[in-house]
View 1 (cartoon, rainbow, N blue to C red):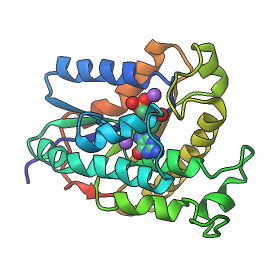
View 2: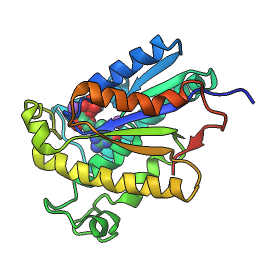
View 3: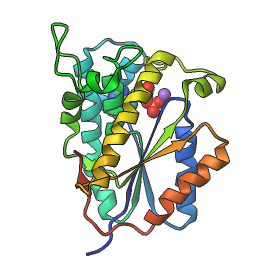
Length: 240
Ligand code: DGP
Ligand code: NA
Ligand code: NA
């Protein structure tokens, strides 16, 4: 079987340097003589992406469930494009993916001092509508192409603060960011546990300490991506 391209996702907190590092990584892959296709979520250019953009800029208010489904739909809009790049042997480099979808939606229901594992798996409802738990949040992204490798750029809220604080958008607030970070940690544990048991892939999950000097972070990222430059033999997995 011909080798296909590898699917690499970069996830991270706001102010983690995700955009800069993704850009450096793209250049390095090209300098290594390999073809790379870049995808970024949310893709604000599509009709659904435009709705997401309005929401993120607080120009519209939407129910949390609706927002969650829009972000997922935005990924489905590009799923076949991602697959065809992979089949053509290109490495797909994706800035955020379904893990962000879960992390941001589930973070909304967490108390500021989370007792995480009980809360995010809870089926209990305390309003008219059920809050978004992990099971519900996972469902719409089920069967999307799964990454071979996810690099999670981790940064503490304190370091993010010293980098000039957060921006103006809806989720860019310190307490939300630390809750998002907790959910990402839980997701990472689950993905790693699955990989450890040899279960079908949600791929490999690597935590990168993005609080360090930029060059150090770049080198560590490269160490993980380099083995994937010549593609992979196995067929593309599906999420969850
Ligand atoms: P970015 O362009 O990477 O800064 O992302 C814009 C914002 O949208 C950022 O605060 C993270 C958030 N976000 C990204 N993907 C999702 C998602 O799937 N669901 C939710 N609720 N938020 C997301
Ligand atoms: Na952002
Ligand atoms: Na998204």
